[in-house]
Amino acid sequence: MAGLRLGPLLRYVDWDAGGSATIWMEADRPCTAEVRCADGAGGSTRTFQVSGHHYALVPVTGLTPGTTTAYEVLLDGVLVWPAADSAFPPSTVSTPAVGGGPGRPAPGLRVTFGSCRQAAPPADQRGPHGADALDTLAAQLASEPEAVRPDLLLLLGDQVYADQLSRDTRRWLAARRDLREAPGAQVADYEEYTRLYYESWLDPEIRWLLSTVPSLHIFDDHDVIDDWNTSAAWLAEMRATPWWPERVLSGLMSYWVHQHLGNLSPAELATDPLYAAVRATPDGTDVLRTFAARADADPASVRWSYRRDFGRTRLLMVDTRAARVLAEDGRAMLDPAEQHWLRENALAGHGGYDHLLIGSSLPWLMPPLIHDAEVWNAALCRGVRGPRWARIGEDLRRRSDLEHWAAFPSSFEALSDLIEEVGTGPRAPATVCVLSGDVHHAYVAEPRIPSTSRVFQLTCSPVHNSIHTAVKLGFRLGWSRVGRWLGRGFSRHGRTGRPPLSWQRTGGPWFGNQLMTLALVGRSARLRLDQSRKGRSGARLVAVLDRELTDAE
Image (cartoon, rainbow, N blue to C red; front, side, top):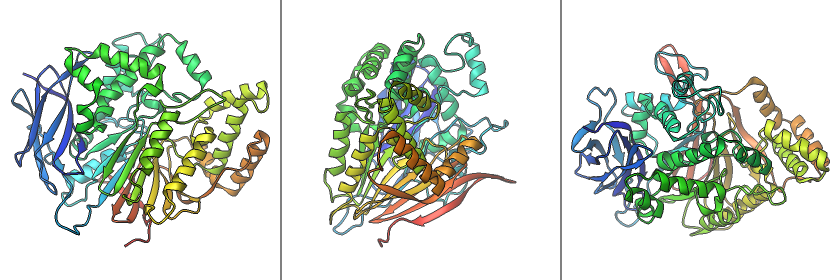
């Protein structure tokens, strides 16, 4: 009898007609996976196999717009979800109230986002990072039926840490191979990646939360390795390392299976040749390995970025890792095709949406000192101060993680220009928000640009991780007047000039395990930041910011 190994995860929910969804899962053997909803909606599909694992992405149809319905999962006709001993409420699919009569208002959208989540330890163990914000959110939603749930979870990178493993996972690795051999206590292949997803997604609170709140994902560096694609020199060194080819292929393969597939709509899945090829063969491992090898060798051959429209809110999730151009004389965060895709989708139907969300794992606007240091570093590595300074610059780049948008100056300017263009004129959206994580703290920054839209950098990280005190002090310095003065010194030495725009911090910095939530209704936007804090009765989410971002009614 087939069993449910991982999932279910509610991924896509249709915001155009409100009648369909997709639910991802892993079974322990080949089978037919079926979803049955209490209102009669449902769907089924056969599992597909990758490296001995059996997955399904079940299309659910027949849902009623504007409703919430419980669902069950059956494998070969046998009920496997919810578990018989579950202490959680039923898993549900909620659909937006779309359509209807003339003048019917568009549904509001609540987006909760964050990044950098190391798996929480079991309930009977203490971990080094404090209370997991996503765990805490799940526990509160499960225990408070009246609580308002997010319509969407945006997971903005570092969903798993391939290079920073828990004690339990290190023990598991040690039982299957010698950790004295490279890559040591890091994941090495696809099977070891699956262990990371089990550890993270089988957490009872997280498993229930992901089964009932739709999620969209994008990778960041730790999903593959710290500082992934920092520079051409970094990549050349990694490709000369014997264990790297298997690591990067396994990272891309596991991301495609566990995260990327669920980002796609049923229409996109129906025309995706790779998805069709993997499902058409008894074992899709070789097909997927070939794809991953091509994606690594030629990043322009695949697009990990994607667009989703939620009523009058548009989301563009941007790949800021695999799509980079690393040649020092042409460094770019996005290759030309990716930059064109971003521009085209930001401007398509301009005036037809009220809010533009740009999901970028890496912040666009950083503390000014760090911004100036990254621009300076890029100039050194490009050779403006000669080969000795170029070598120093490359070493500093890797030691200090100098690889955000500012480290790709032409890309920073292009994104800034695009945001100003989108946000200008009578048909501009009410807000343009860049949603980011990565930097293990949270803040709100606003650029000084002549736009009609309100423009924000909203950075929220970590969901469950920590930050060294010295780094914390460095971020505080980066926002200070002294930091700005030091940054001008970097600019003079690197001959880089002033940034093409200026910005100010209007919230934060906040440190701790946290989540941000954007509530978008009509042309209004409200931002809330919640931190997970332990108390006598357990962890609770505590609001440290609750702020209107617009003046719209």
